[in-house]
Length: 68
Image 1 (cartoon, helix red, strand yellow):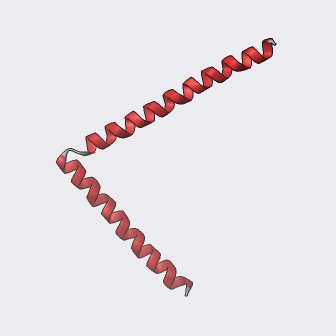
Image 2 (cartoon, rainbow, N blue to C red):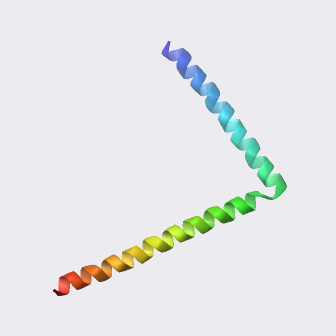
Image 3 (tube, rainbow, N blue to C red):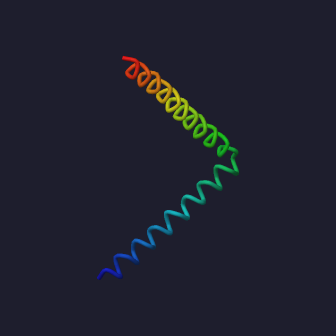
């Protein structure tokens, strides 16, 4: 029974992967892939900016605590 379930899951997984490739090909063909990449890069840049800013604040607070 487990073999049948795994077989069905593998078939579904391969269909999902093929759909992803087709979608990426469509985006690339229409030039929309650059928009997707730009949005992802903007989100990642904002995330890293927030992390660095948070790290800077935490270091400042640690210094203030050590001084007291």
